Amino acid sequence: MKQITREELVKKYLDFFKSKGHKILPSASLIPENDPTVLFTTAGMHPLVPYLMGLSQHPLGKKLCSVQKCIRTQDIDEVGDSYHHTFFEMLGNWSIGDYFKREAIEYSFEFITKVLKIPLERFAVSVFEGDKDAPRDEESAKIWESLGISKERVAYLPKENNWWGPAGKTGPCGPDTEMFYWKPNNKKAPKKFDPEDNNWVEIWNDVLMQYVKDEKEKYTEAKQKNIDTGMGVERTLTVLNSLEDNYLSSVWEPVIKEIEKVAKKSYKGNERAMRIVADHIKASVFIIGDGVTPSNKEQGYILRRLIRRAVNYGRELNMKSFVEKVAEPVFSIYKEYPELIKNRQKIIEELKKEEERFNQTIEKGLNVFNKLTKDKKEMDCKEAFLLYQSYGFPVELIEEECKKRKIKFSIKDFEKECQVHQELSRTASAGQFKSGLADNSEATTQLHTTAHLLMAALRIVLKDQNIMQRGSNITPERLRLDFNFPRKLTDEELKKIEELVNSQIQCNCEVIREEMPLEKAKTSGAVGVFENKYGEKVSVYTVKNPKEKVGYFSKEICAGPHVGNTCQLGKFKITKEEASSSGIRRIKAVLQQK
Image (cartoon, rainbow, N blue to C red; front, side, top):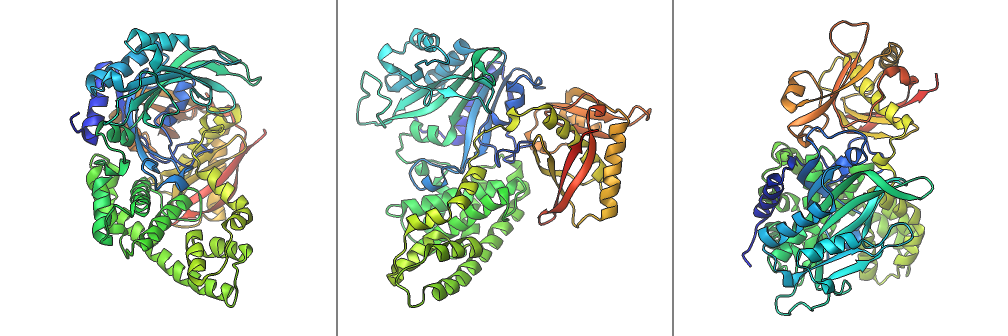
């Protein structure tokens, strides 16, 4: 089979679905907008949840496709094997209340067999086997069989394998059908598909959103049926190019070669450390490119952990001051991402600063370690936790130093000691939907609209039209908004902001939604939070004061949902103003009952 590059795969995919009437979406930011439960965009469908739930219509229509950059950190400890990654790209196509099972499966089959030219003898599928909640998905199986897939190559699997959702406790969900490729070149695929055989690699997944789960955990047929698919670029490239190791594909090879050059070591025999360094540096480049800087909170904490873990494994390879060199190939591999080109210097600077900080931390930590272990034969787990939490000293280094000095150290006792800390970190970084955008309760919707009022008030009171949202977290209880501003706000400024927002609430301002081309939205004065995520047509929400004949109070590009009039909001109250990170301020606020 002819070797295929990342650029070719992505182009083939987008061109194919464009020919089927799909509109191409730009990749959304890695930082989710208005989703309190996840730190990063974890899948192509993530930015589309409101539309898949039927809360509003997508301005580009019902048939969409994209290549979406994603970050998942729930498997960070698995990175180092041949196929786990923190950063990856996901190819996806969606039907939002348009085509359903037959067309979705036929599109998948045509792309795989006609475009990618994967032979049928190396192809198998799985479908949902059925349970008390939903019947066996015979429909999908029959569609596959009608396309030429033998019954022996169709496996019926339980919900844990072939079911998606809902995103929260309630909402759209349904069975999925997964596609598999027989990996070995020197071994013929068996006639019968065995999902337990690791030689079969999943390459694509079609989620068939057929049902809605209610509060009583009952599943009913959805009025709006959707299709959500996902094909990982890295895994597909590896499979198509007959490789056994993702890190040997074109999206990783330049980074690995640079690590070999700097370390003066071969990849063979040092695979795990080199994979971790390559993965974590690439992920860090993209996270910084979307405006995050290393810190001890949320996305910044994950970024700091990734950089420091990369530096730590770089030490194993005897590399020093290396992050800039390892990052350089990433910019060449992903030339089409404007945020990388635009922020290249900042990305390099942040990587170098964090590497330097961590090296200083290690030296301080080693001094503390020496004091804690002096004349001791065993490292106390409480002291190890202190070293880890307070000094940022990696547990891998604690183990390494204990081993050098023949000091006993129980990693199990250490993990028990910091279980609460680790669980909080894991929950924060897992990137799993819990309630998220599925929680479009009345209270959350009200606070979402209030966030627009707050942004407009900040620009007016602080007399700075360059103030932009840098992140938000909205729950039914409160809103939290991050914005760029160089100093702490005064009590007087906060009071004026509160009064201005409340004045707009009391004026019964209408909230108007319009669909328009992106360029028209910009020229009309609409503010965009993450501009690179938008397509050629967008939704614009305008808050207009009826007392003013011309103009508006707030105008933003947004996916919603929003109230229809500010009279539906309560009294606005700022509860806290603080620093979020360098140059970024944070306001927390609530709506009190009228």
